[in-house]
Amino acid sequence: MKIENHGALDNNQLITIIERIEKLNEDAAAIAADVKEVYKEAKSAGFDPKYIRQMIRLRKMDQDEIDEADELTKMYRNALGL
Image 1 (cartoon, rainbow, N blue to C red):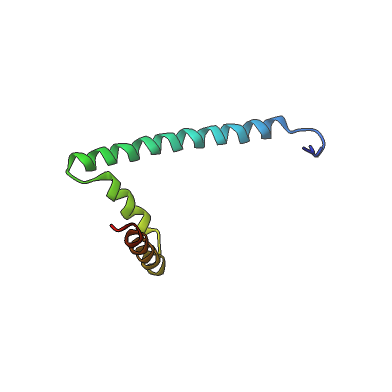
Image 2 (cartoon, rainbow, N blue to C red):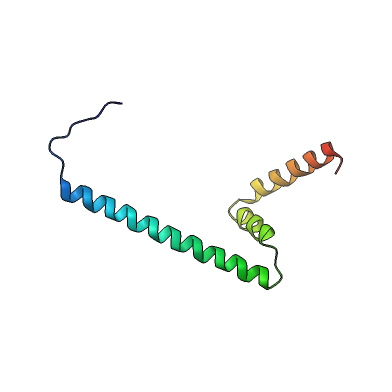
């Protein structure tokens, strides 16, 4: 691996960057815990988290992607005799 030398390191800038990344990682962990809690609430309310996750994935897709996924699912199910 080649290490480029851009002159002297700016220690303060490096510390700032590392601290920002650490804070973002902490925030991401907190958000992940919040999402997990919402899934627990959904399950307690009688919803199936597995299908909620699937609906979230589908909502990120455009209609053509959804249609293609449906067709492929049907094709695979038919091939497996389901």
